[in-house]
Length: 270
Image (tube, rainbow, N blue to C red; front, side):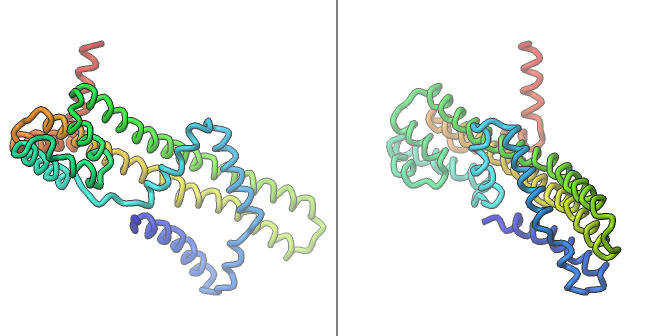
């Protein structure tokens, strides 16, 4: 589990509670003023409804996978991946591609596992490249859809909070004959809806969207390295050359040069 995501959530909500307690001079009974089932129901259900209305079912089905990305952590990085691909290259160069069959079955990375299986089976280079790139694009689309859904929720949530407050104020205007204490309590409850809307948007939905985007970009970077490395292994390239190529590719991607080159190429082709 990605502890960072959990710590972020706890910190965000703890900050709200602590600030409220300081304002209330640490009267813990005042915390009950932050709790409103009607306001929470209106904001949460209203936001969910707006999101469902905004996206087709095919996109919504990708949400669990994207949500899993928020709370899971990959136990490998770019450098480790390059070293692993270099080791596989040395093994293939020494004992042949068929020696990678066991690695194809036991490797923890699904893309490497699939790619090695294709290499061992002697599939053509272009076919392997096409299959792995489509797999990479599919995973990227899952993250992209999840990020867009959470971004949309982050936009709808504050609006739902304001609507909840407006509805509460309408209810208050209908009870103007009530005593002052009761009216004050009703006003406070009405504004809780706005707080919920802003809180969920800025402490949950939008941070989730940002986290998914960052993790997706890193996963794509690693997957691009894997695809390039596997194709080089199949071509029988020198392990040292493969490692140097992948390190250069990594540096280009991290500096953004790879993207700028692609954009220039597209402009020339256009």
